[in-house]
Image (cartoon, rainbow, N blue to C red):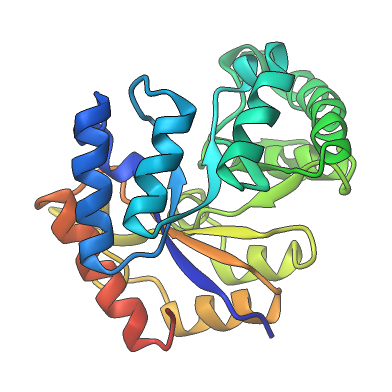
Length: 256
C-alpha cells in the first residue's frame, strides 16, 4: 500500500502561466489552495532557476513534468540538468507526436522502440520516463489496442505508464483495471473525473462526476502509486476553484 500524495497538474492553469510573473502568482494561489506539489506542464518561458526559486518559496515540490517529446529527444542533457535542478525525478510526455499516430499500427510500434531508447538515457541519469494516454490509444489494431502495443513493445524499465482516468473511461476502458494492469510500472496517475452535460461526456472536478473514486484510489494504493496529479483540461468554472474542489474531495477520501 502506497502513501500516495496529491499534486496539481499545471495544464489545468495553462491560461494563467504565460509569463514568469503569472507563473509566480499562480503557484502562490496553488499553494494557498492547499497543494504541496505540482506537475509542470504548458508553461510559458521561464528560467529554470527562477522557477525553482518560486516553487521553493511557495513550499511546492516539483514532482513530475510533462515535456515536449522532440525537445526531450533533441536536448536530452539540458532537460536532465533542469530536472536535477528542480529535484524532480519523473519526466513524462502528454502524448506521442502526430507522426507516429498517423502511421497507424506501425507508428505505435516504432514509437514504443524509440521511446524505450530515450527512456534508457533518462534512466541512466537517474530519472524515470512515463507515457500519458488519451483515448486515441484505445483504437484496435487486430487483437491489440494501441496502448497495449506501446507498453508491450517497449522496455518496462525505461517506459512507464501514466494512466489518465478520464481518457481511459473515454476510450471505453475501466480505469481501475488499467491501473492494476500496470502496477509496478507507474509512479503517477492522472485524476480527472467525467460527467455528462446535455448528453455529452465532459470533464469534471474529481468527485463531482461519475467515476468510481473509492475504487480508483484503492487501486492506486495497491499499485504503489506515488503521486496522483489532479488535472482538468476543460473547466466549467474558474480553474483555481476547480482545483480546490478536487483537492477537498480527495481529502475526503483520505488523501493528502
